[in-house]
Image (cartoon, rainbow, N blue to C red):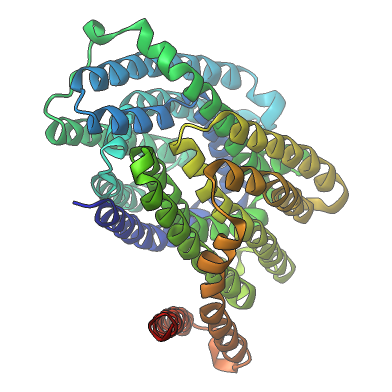
Length: 501
């Protein structure tokens, strides 16, 4: 299959899976909040956010698996593929042990940093240990998910995720109302992690029959080869974790666990819109790596411009929808669990975070192409600098402006660093004209976005458009249809102009 066909298949698989995840996530978030209550749910959000920092222990090796499996598989070198996978699996086994030891330390100090006492403390400690085991198991098995990424079989990886999302829903419905809700959730996540990773292993062996792991494949030269790339990818991972997982921890430690909840719903809705677009960047990196040759330069540049245009269109549409209807979605989603003031605050947080995504997601495509081309050091350092600014500003603004200040602490560094530093660097090193990006990637999306803006403005003024899920879903589908029709019309006009010329 051609690169374009492979990317199209993988993107459609990613979006199909995300659509189902969106429905599942909406349902489970509200269901979990209703069953556990605001205080216990806030505890879960805090613990899960801390567990999210386990991503640092991957040390950038997740991207390394994807890149080098893609590289050596395309070169027909199965021996090197096996060496790459075996070395990284060994590293993951070691880091999984580190994760569990870290969980033991958090368990011992939980009264100090979490404020739990009595039975709540016991439950929190058991949950922390279970999350530590979950991280250790998940790290070891994820290397085979990385193999699927490197082979550009995102459709299979997403299919596994979708299947076990359904398993998770079933387990939540069966067991969450039992006592000790935090422990129940941690146990469910552990079972799902084990199932997913077994499936990744079996699929990787089936798609790549020559795949073999074991001590005989360990080679120091492989570790040295991966070292420079993975160390810089690690810095990028550190930055990503600081940006995406620090907000809830900052709020929980400075303002209390219950203060996380109104922020989380704005953040979660922003994540729902961000995740399918991020999948495009994940798919782009191995594809860009496979198009490194001089003869593939034209294909790479065309692929970059087209991808940037699609991402800008999608994130622009998400921003318009969030601005006009995000508050209605949050209100219908959360219900009476939050006060009207908290609901309005959640909507403001959503809009601020969507502003950040309007810039960060297209820039993420540039970063993916840089990484895929082997240009990793400076982009990773830029991203790390942005993350440090994010953390510092979020803490300061949290103390002065509450949870809304944390959202601005995320957005301001994105605007300054991504636009002011990353974009000029990426265009220079990818040897792509900024004017070409504006003319071929951004400008064609303006007509569709203006059409969507006009429809959203009109629909938001109608009294019937705010109080029913069915209406909001209909508005969303109509908006998507208008966006698609306007894009089709714009492309027809462009073709007519080219034919006339």
